Amino acid sequence: MALPFQCFYQCTWMFLLLTLSLTFAEGGKILVIPQDGSHWLSMRPVVEKLQQNGHEVVVVVPSTSLYMKPKEPQNYTVKVYPIPYGEEHLAVTLKSFVNAHFIEQSVLNIIITMYQSMLEVSRFFFTNCKSLLHNEDMMHYLRESKFDVVFTDPILMCGPIITEYLSVPSVYFLRGFPCGMDSEATQCPNPPSYVPRLFLNNSDSMTFAQRMKNMLVHMLEFVYCKPIFAQFEELAYEIFQKKVTATDLLSRGSVWLMRYDFVFEFPRPVMPNMVFIGGINCDQKKKLSQIFGYQPGL
Image (cartoon, rainbow, N blue to C red; front, top):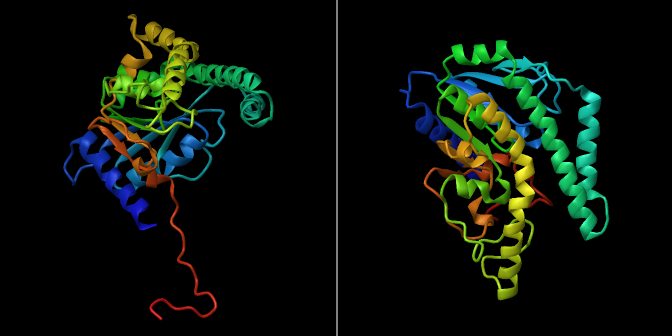
């Protein structure tokens, strides 16, 4: 398991060098806008490591969350903002989302229920983001704190909106984006004739029929993703008083730390600011004990 941890430390240093542009003797001031759930479980070790390396880290979290509990012991600063939902509402929303993905049903019902549950979850996190942006005390604190960089999971757009509002560089930490928005935002080639769409189980070597299916799914993505991100675009318009798309906001990202390993992905173009850090999700394991008296080298 040495390789994943080598990747972890290399990417941590790359993050610091590319975004903070500080000397080794100085510490940066980092604002963290995370995403709840498994997203935060992957990001938290990086946040802790940044704090240990002498950087001042401030994590902004909602009053109700699944894993981002402010009462847990931590060595970084946590700022909590109130939201109009309690633990029960969050539990019901997430249960509905999980059921839509794992309850056995017809293909058509799976598509419909998954889409409906995705819209419901996105509305919940949209309310969280709106509550943060309309919290005058919190926004005043963020403006006056003069952060050097925003470290965020951009999947539901609140981090990119905050980044644009504060006019500071940003580092994205994510597994990927639906509908190829990451490729569009980074101006990375993503031709549907060669790059398989998500969940189709195609390789980069597709038959004509598979390419046609890939193209149809690509066209469907415009309908699928528009309602999810339109509400965030409206919120951005309210904040900036100008029309801005989700892709426009994402394009401001300085570095994209992608939480998957290129070894397990199909060949496709990537941009220079897209860094693969799949090993960051691996925990260090203890060495295997000797079994039945076997000793290495014998």
